[in-house]
Length: 212
Image: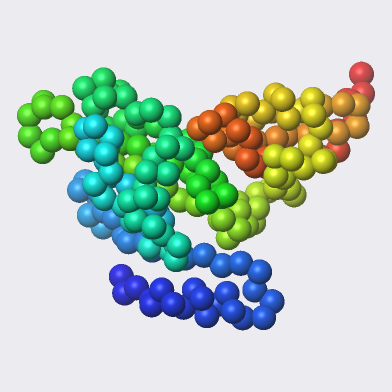
């Protein structure tokens, strides 16, 4: 894959009428058992590697012009729950954390994986933590792919009923609310600190009851 210059994203953002834009890299991965097939893999925009004592050893945010190096890595790491010691990790190859983290005022989907030794059953050497910001362009892709009209609501949106807000305490756990006229669905994004950051909401008219 030949990558385009990253400066192109700034050129596109400067076009009159463009409200937001983002970038992504992808490559064609192949499964050994299916050499004639490939699948696309999208790049992430945040990568952090920590050692077995949770000390940052690698930090990369190529799309962040305000990146402050390891000082930012420490701030980002502080938004995650305490990672278990490598010897107490979950099953081999399974994430030790998957969730939403807020950094620089924006939410991101984040995963953390143990860095396994190349051979043997020794303890992992640390963790690979990677994420993708949920920016305007990512949100639009979600909305464009939805079969029905979806609204994106900030946590403090006045249109989000208080009795609904207090029930949105688990990230990506849908909530369905019905009344005599409408069916409403809510999908919350809750960060690792338990704070509600975004809500995807959909509403549809309730069908009339079937005749008896």
